[in-house]
Image 1: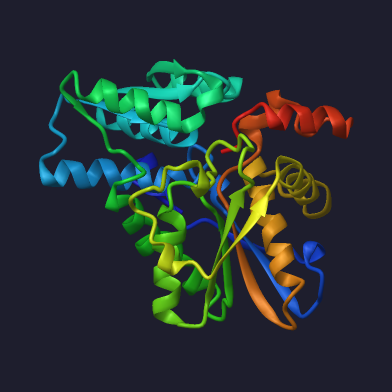
Image 2: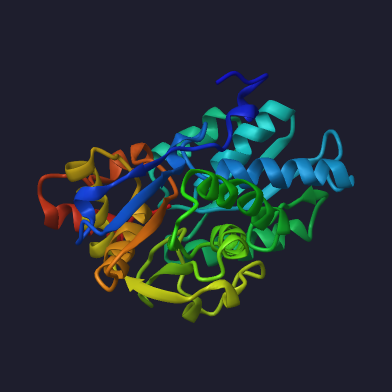
Length: 310
């Protein structure tokens, strides 16, 4: 692959089989490895789309300051894109983000504003919206930006159909809603009987990046009509799923990827045949400091309950 610059390498991520995690040889599980994007997550797709769409519309002018609430990956992706394009970026992020995330934001030149850990991403959103009212900022706002949906409709969903036209089920984490809405819409246009399933955290679990709709904030871009089902996931379920990915399939992915795999396996248990695509949003490198892969499972579970997942 050849690209004129780093932005040209975003997308076209691998789709690989994970047969050892399937409950049946007649149900094939596939992993879409979004950790292969330049900064290690699917958020590179939406960061580029939101910035370039804003440039085309005139909403983002040369010299403008960009502001965004994030649980980490979108901020890192925007920091990379803004560094490449010459924009100053301020991110608002919960204070319990992993060390790797904070360091990467600093390395790409982003200014960091932290918010209380117990308020999660909702707290970061509230502070960022307050800041945006008091200055000349451009806030892409991933939770309400249609470019988020478009990036997954034109990119993620189209790539899955290119590589696996016979896909029967698509499982992804419920975060901003952009992946489920955009990719899900593209898949259903191709095949109306494709099932789109969300991995949603149990109410009360601090699962940053993934969100429970029962907490009161529903991302404006989420089209719930696209969803054919939702499965609740605990922090422990997600941790075990991520560890299984590494130990049984050799895939080093983040904790929310474990949540998606946990749900995909539950879906597969109900099927006689099928091709189930699991969207793995990021790699595991940004979570090493959390001890999520510690030999002591009890220690790992405690760390995951206190740390950003996505």
